Length: 206
Image (cartoon, rainbow, N blue to C red):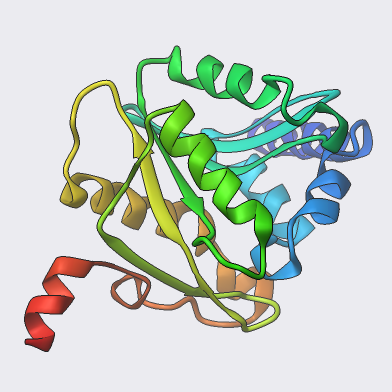
């Protein structure tokens, strides 16, 4: 009974997170559907993955997964009226102050999306993120669209592509593919199909 009460209490707190804030709608308005998780997926992650967290303010929303040696930023947005005013840097510096590596997925630079180059410059030039030599292609659980993303990492000490790949594999299994069959009614892709070291595949191709 105690366990059931605890689970019920936690579920009610998760519901309160959704009902007391419009952060979910803010994410949906900004991100294309092919990059969004369903509401149920978010609910399960917040309820069952203690290190999946939300940080928000009037000008920003950040959803992230924190482990002992790294933070993975799943979603980050700054409101349109607040962009260019240093809000994004304040948020990133707050996460950097934890002293852990920070990993995130960034859309490749594309002529179809003028903001894509600005985002990459923001991470690389202003915050010293490094683009890792990691291939990443994931089929969206709802739209079935193929998403190709670049992996960036910031760290106080140098980290290798292999180190980041291992963390991304954990992120994929514990966040993106977590209970996918239950939530979306489809089997998740094997992690080996989603993430790989580009150098390794180039050697195989040769």
